[in-house]
Length: 294
Image (cartoon, rainbow, N blue to C red; front, side, top):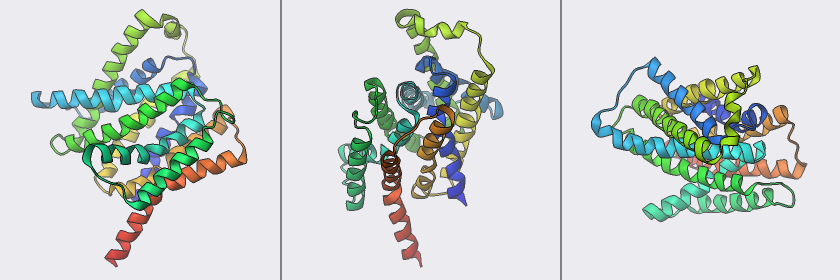
């Protein structure tokens, strides 16, 4: 049952790309990141007030900068510059980056099945992202790699901090800190670099855009992050990883329904295979664990 619950926040996150392209395609990514993170963090603070101690601030500042400010910036650069379905499916490559990161920083060599699935993901992504068949923006692809790396580094920081700091403090203040950094970055960007992109701030906001912002702030961020942290305390990471299969599925479905993105059958097949190979190692590991218990 917990695995079904884990699919809920993953599905919500998977809607980010299509919702952004559908309702706010011309909005600056830094501004979108700030509007998603800061109100969500303040909402969580209102629900359960908390304040970090003096010794906790440096760690939370680092976490907010990496796990929220950088990650949300990359996410919305992807959303604006890549096809929604491609952005969603591309994020299933997290295991590849995680394995390389663990190998380089901790000397942890991947298991054979992990290495095989990682290579399969690389080959499938190469085929799916072939410029001859899919129009890709270089900035969007660079943001995809940045998002993958910040997920791995940010998750490592969250795991280490949650041992010493209450999870609600980590959850709330990483959003507030990250959102504040993004807001300052958006102000500088709009004042000095790309003022023309920020003209949308002075234009009337439509009902559709208000609805999209509500979706990104409340279900997509505040509720999804609460569920994410709550579930990790009640199930293993391997079990939770099954739920993440809903993320690219949401990306594909919303891309078709909201912005009418269409792909050929062989491209949908590649997407499906990437999803399978991304969860296969955890699936086999969990299956082996259950067999050993019986």
